[in-house]
Image (cartoon, rainbow, N blue to C red; front, side):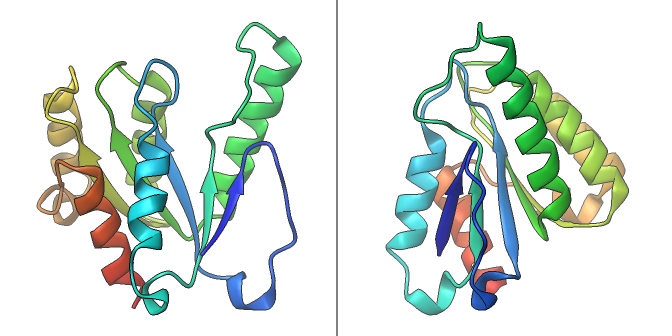
Length: 159
């Protein structure tokens, strides 16, 4: 697995041209679930992890810098469009309003394979369940409640 972290952009080797996976989920005021996801995937057999992973969590991000904010939003927008698969994690610690928007946009578009996970402590989990059930019942029936379960679902799909 190759991890491409915001705001970087690399040219992927041919073996990683597809599939590309985007980690959509909370960053601000949320645990670093992205690293937990990556670590769990890396613990798997390499045959399960032959993909590129777009991670929007930056090591250093000044939310008060308008240039950095525009760069981040643009990077996320472009990588979501490029991705073949989007993994949504609704984390405790924040309402994750941007992720709700992204789930609505990409979940209803049916253009991409999506996986959804919801932390038991996420304050709007009912909204995620209802919206997913209405838009993509097959995804609703597969919602998980831990980052490790979400990583396992993705890895099994990639085989």
